[in-house]
Image (cartoon, rainbow, N blue to C red; front, side):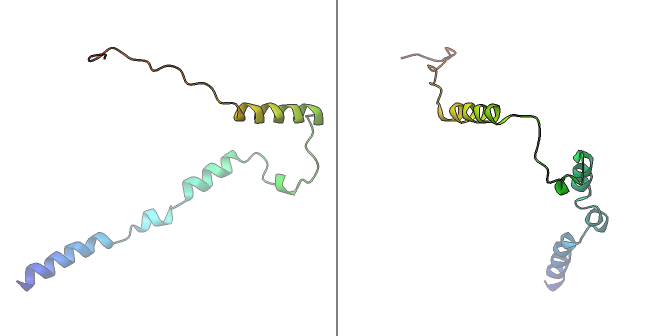
Length: 87
């Protein structure tokens, strides 16, 4: 009775092993994708203001954005395919 229990415990403990090859590469894909998507890594050091949009246009764009979020579209009527009985 003890030998089957010991064998079952050993088999269960084999699932706890690590995968050193996978652990070594953990996060590598994410770091690589972030590096590929970074246009200018030193952009955080640039403290000059952003050029390209005058204040009035920026305010109007922001106001339109806020209004678009606050208005709710009316829900359309339910669409039925006609399967089954309509009562």
